Length: 480
Image (cartoon, rainbow, N blue to C red; front, side, top):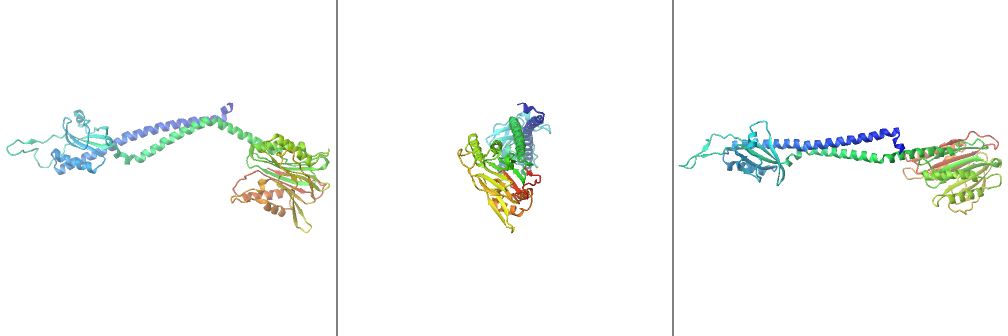
């Protein structure tokens, strides 16, 4: 895709490549470190343990004054019983022959040449082998114990020649590789974590690389949805300078970036004012698309001076939606016509929540009327019929139209805002302007929700009759 080559995504691609390179370096370094630990450090630890045993055996031989092979074998056997990591111990002669042996051991891996290497005090002579018990390290050390006060040769039985003592050259000690486990277990665990992190980093970079095109496409969709949101908000009227005799204010808050709620207010023939609020089923882009279709259809179906009534307009709108949309997509609508000369409000309620009309009695008591007359929702039954009703809307009366996202707003305690709270706020602020009533309702909803977001689109439209029908109202206000 050409979009993925845009300069703003070059840095993103470069970071993926850098992350992949770092992952490879980390993996290689972790493996090398692990091999170094497993081979060098473990070998050094095992060799040091074997060296300590060699010194210990020399000391024990001196203290016990053990010169005979059987005496040394007893010392070795006792050590093998106490130290489970010792696999075998044996004494080698000058030519590499086995003189003393304790433990199950294969043929000695050392020869006379290995024994000659012991002349260098800095040399380390050892090999790694596999015994029956597992891998072992076999180390070779000089073995020249001192003996206390006995002659270098023992006298034989009376009348026989003395028996020469064996010439010990080296001691061979085999120690299990498991002996180094406790010392390096924590370090090995850290190395395993490093290797796992390197593999995870490589896998992440690989997935990011493979999903980059999808990411770019997703960002493009987000930009398009944001553009659609602005277009949708532009469709909602911010004011109506030609709407004489009323003061109105509105607010529309989609639960997502775009929504299916809409409102409209515009003058028609005869000085009347058309006031509409609708709610498309669902949320998001599908609802927004249907809302755009409905917005244009409403203007085309609006009552005119040729005698078309609200009933006919709603039937016409219902037939359009029934043909153009599926049965699972429908619209609830409240459509009002206000005649400022007669102070009358005609309306059709097509399956929408009934709007509230607040009237104040001369004694200050408030009375609410619910505008319920009409018919079913639009777009489901193509031959549905709608009934128009009329009510008074005089000086100071307040009309409040809203979507279900307002009264059904649910807080963290799973409690709905409800119509009763809405009525109380309207009654409390009835003497204020339409914009102030709208703001009071929105603030009450925000406080009620707390930190919980909206679950559905919220739309509110407040209309207040001006004191005089011919009076030019204050500039209308809308909020989105």
